[in-house]
Image (tube, rainbow, N blue to C red; front, side, top):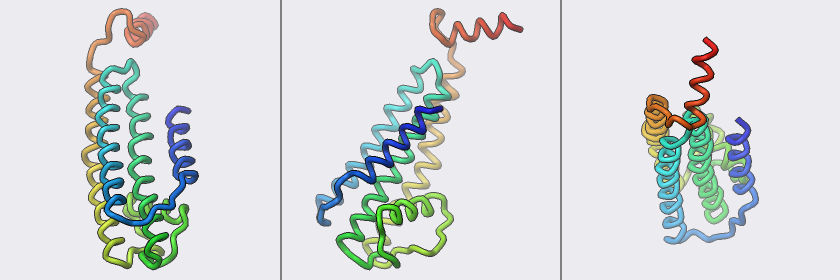
Length: 173
């Protein structure tokens, strides 16, 4: 279980240490779209890894520990960048921590109301995140869980670690 925690910690560290000094432009939108495509490619890669893993449940947890923070930190970074370039886009100025807090409250659908988008651009970006949240929760989570279940139902190759573990469990009965 240490690996998923390490993955999340590294992603959050990168979020806080990455230099964010870009101005808003069409390039910024392209980077957001490419980042979302990278999340999609990561989901596909992780599903493939789960389907080949001797420990699909652990690999599924690892996949979620990678995909969900990547998605959330991508939006947090863009909220922070929006606030840097267009002060007043939210009801309060956003630090990186505020942006992370806001993205998690939107993802968790609790929306405490202390931070809200004010400008049209901010509202569009938050709306995109909300739609993405629904896709992550409805589709990505389901695809990863189905991959784990599919792999668990497959017989393990005779010499694999999984097959040996099953034989040991049966012998202990």
